[in-house]
Length: 390
Length: 126
Image 1: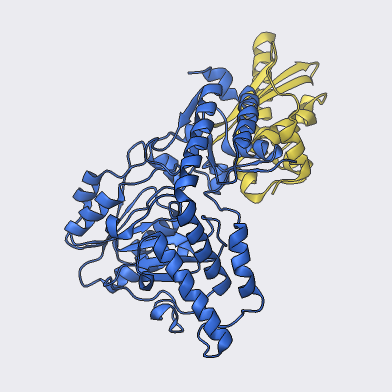
Image 2 (image 1 turned 90 degrees about the horizontal axis):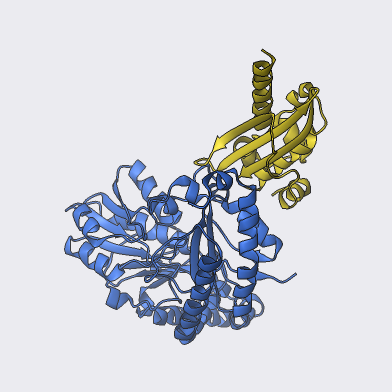
């Protein structure tokens, strides 16, 4: 059966060139970069080369890049280690209601352990309004953490403005850029951010590796103890094959970003317009102008997300949803509720996130199949026959 | 995650729709929870002659609805009343634990339809 993968916000396939760059470090170049001998030095060289590749992607200095096990660890270190290192100034943290759980749960954990927490609401497009942040800041606020783009609805935040507002109040600014790194231009200097989390597997790199960018001069401690790796910021033998893959993926992303983004914007537009034209009672979620390229996020009234996913999967189409059944709880995703959708609409969510290998033919196939699926599920839905098409 | 039987009943649900003149109608769940099951029955001489369902919900909700309609067709009301959410889940070779609670209400909908039938039947017998 034909396989159409449209869940690139969840993860991406490893690019062939990335895989090839990793092979030596999974085979004969197995050295530990802390070792003095030849193999150790080869690993160290590869590590530093990857650091330069990742730094170049976000216009950072390589010394400001610290490799981690992924986005979640980077978020944890940025938040936990920063606020714990700055309790003299205060114990107030600000975040937004639509953050990834790697940020939200971390902030909640700190909240339970004596920190004050403000969770900013977002507007119906999923944007944090700068005025709202301005009002929430206090003299004792040490950290503002707001994601660059949302993983479910694709909305891109006005990070530059939000960071500047945080700085005016003397707070540091962290952003989870897992969904945008390699997809949108990211210049840490220009954006004026203090810390940024990134993950390799969202940009055609391997899983299990990510990084935390820490601006020079920003002080924070460790999350993991046990060795001097990563300039004493992250203990543990470096995941060299993963890091090399991440570096290669970052370099490829830098070279191809403009071309791929333009392509995905076009392809995503075609998919979104096609869905809206062929399926009535569809609600587009997120911001249409400020969004991640290739991210299509909608809610279909009268049907439930998991059913849509399994029906799509039977045609070889792989997507995701923020419905309760897919969130592993009884409630739909916190993101869909935060943008003001009622539960019954949020249950009908579908997210199709396109990648560089998707084609127009893939989009057309989805547009051929999806209206049938939604139609069939609606025929089965007691809400549809009752509610009609209002 | 789902058994083959669940997937079969989800992909090819039996008895979807509504009856022209239902003798009993039952509905459980609500749209906020993400599951609504609506069952209609046609009864003759205490036997469920026909049954149809409509369900809003996940694969488990649709599969349990489909399964319960298959289980009760041709059964007496007494036999139908003995069907429980658990026996429906068992007939589907089980459901994931998280679904046992929220999406396994089809037997409840059936029991409401039977109750509705009995109530109407008594009305007309008066």
